[in-house]
Image (cartoon, rainbow, N blue to C red; front, side, top):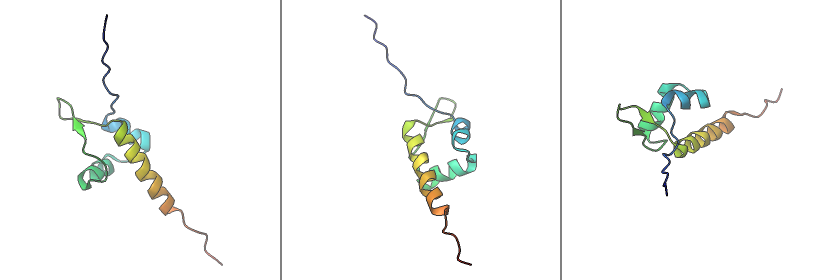
Length: 75
């Protein structure tokens, strides 16, 4: 019997930035301010984001997007 242990899917900084169309500095700023959970780093010291981070970033963008929508101004 072979037991297969799967590694959790993770994403690089570039993959996250491309996925959400955000700048690397924005992502790092959110991490520094504690807006997203702390990010694990691999053996090279590179950040690796997981599904928890993807959901947190998606929620940030969703909430900020709704605040950016303004009502039409009366003429």
